[in-house]
Image 1 (cartoon, rainbow, N blue to C red):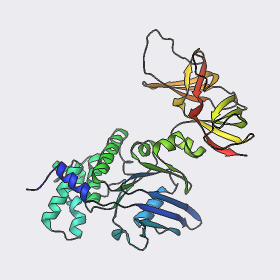
Image 2: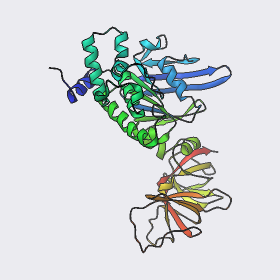
Image 3: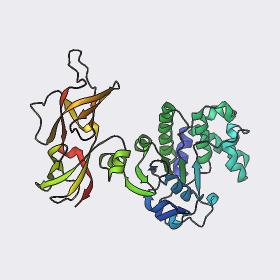
Image 4: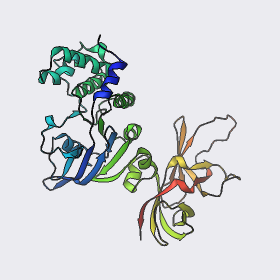
Length: 385
């Protein structure tokens, strides 16, 4: 008797093979335009890896080079240590999911998913089994007789995923696959993709310009800008400890403060002097010397705000005072724009609404407030002598 459901999924996890992908000093030029500049990265076997950046940063070009749709001007791409550049796309054991689904409108869901196996002249019984398995994987087994025009956007994307997986590729490339969906459905499909990845166990390489998508599901994130890799790390590393100003500003919201190292007080701390915000203590996450020019980033959710300075603040915090210039209430939190320096942009502070008291005096527009954050919650993103 044919196995179904969980048994099929486990069988697939046991049988599918994935590859480690290595990009070695890859550059790509189109005439005088450099789309990629000396990019190097390693994608772990079976990992969920995201390439993140604004439009035109080179992420899709790199994906197309891995897939075989572009040839690098310089460098190499290897699967498990073996160069794949001599191989055409259909020999690389790679499949791609595009943002426009690319389904055949005249074929049913079943026939769309079966199409790659029919090209290989696989036996009909095996095709039926494999299609059923993959439709079950994406929860579309009850829609097999429908045509693409009868499906929602999310259903079309599920069919595209099933068709891409039926060949059991070692690497799955996803080129902004959710961008055509509305926000709520996009979030739901992102969770679906993550669950599917956990079931099939192959290497996923996901291209997106949406930082929330990349941070939500990835094991590793590669941030690109203007053809160059800016930082590679876990989602937490990318968000909490950005390598430079571009990463800090592109990944979420942040406050950016320039100043000078007035003194290195011990192995872990230094006195930071900002002409706009005054003096305070910073944590030494990078090597600096007295007199070094430094730029700091402090995330808005790390900063606390109150009408007055609390009496019981711990010693390892930095304290500033300012005036509420604007505020945005969003239900679960309020976003404050607080003017500390008249010559610089206001600091952004997120205040979570963990409790609600009817008799509590809220912080309002034009109020004077106190701000504070832990010394370890600000990170140096640029250091120069």
